[in-house]
Image (cartoon, rainbow, N blue to C red):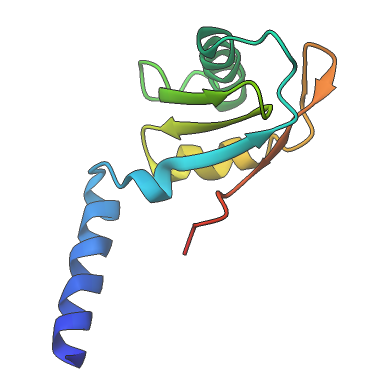
Length: 111
């Protein structure tokens, strides 16, 4: 069992190192989303902020792959294209969006 756990851990690390999508590592929680927000607005906001923050050496294309929005409860999960960009996005905790400071962190089920 120990060997199996080590093999699974090594496979997970290879996925991270090779840039394969590992949704749990690529996902962030965003709370305090203003009423009336739509998924596309959040996607554009995060893509724009990430583009400016990363500068000219950034990988081309959108940082945000998917937005899962629950506007009734005012939160979203955002999936970024890699774990590094997810970490960078977490540094945006308390950034203002439509005048509201967003709460950004790992989802509650993150291990």
